[in-house]
Length: 361
Ligand code: GN1
Ligand code: MG
Image (cartoon, rainbow, N blue to C red; front, side, top):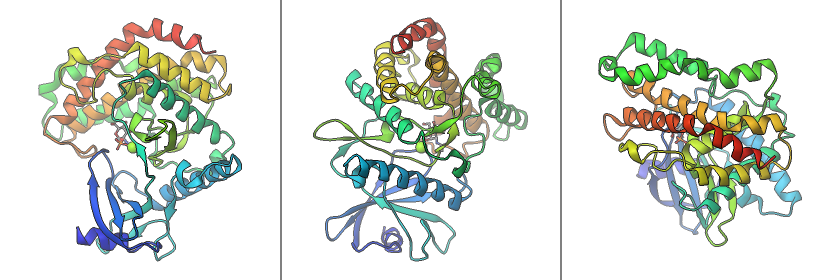
């Protein structure tokens, strides 16, 4: 603990770090809340450089995007310290600190008096989350996508994810393939649908936008008093992409009836009311910037991104759990099965999902 506080002291802040607490949510970076003697709070993160291989690219993207949003907030008369994340430089002048062991750390101001939800009980909450992610898109609509570098190449390139899966299956490093034949068959049976979004981007039917790419419900901070969305967090994967990625990932997580690792699959389905509420908020938050064609494609975004996430979990299971943080040995397999159950349900509900989004054109 002392070591981590020492790391927090490497950043250009006037407060003195005194105490900390680890945040256990998140599959990639390690996160600590830092409490200072003057009452200020910060968030210190150990950047997972196995995943984000170039911290310079990562932090340049984030600093650029948050500066852009900050300007918009100031113009709207809103508090820029609440509406977007503020990162601090280390003594070196870089927005991350490299410790003697080579680990990279970053520090940002803790946004206080907010709630962060892991699941949505109410449709009102989902509508707000939807509008926050839609609004985020809007705020970045005039951001120069050329200034962004890919932090994880091919992040939502589902055919490329499928290819990685096939390579892992072939290698079978952890010797697990024989025990998961049905799950493997599920992926291979769904090969064709994997290219749905990428084909449309290549054809020019779906435009490239600046997207968040990790639009889980828990990546929006909501004001504890008013319940209104305050800030979009987890900006590591902001890259050029399709709006279907953001809509899809949000539905995958937020409109599911159960947690991402629920093992009783009879409890796992896509909630139509939650889908409707999120779609309403999201399309509304975009303030008319989506074409009719894009809106009609949104439901397929949910199906493809849920399938892709399941494939990523299963690939990691085959690889011996090297990517996602797991809490027990079969965790990735359980997560994959959960996502595939959701895919099956979405396949059945697709006509209904299309009817729902049509209402918001
Ligand atoms: C990872 O760490 P977290 O929970 O924000 C992953 C997402 C997955 C998600 C699945 C950089 O996000 O792509 O959808 O787990 N982030 C990265 O829960 O791979
Ligand atoms: Mg994330």
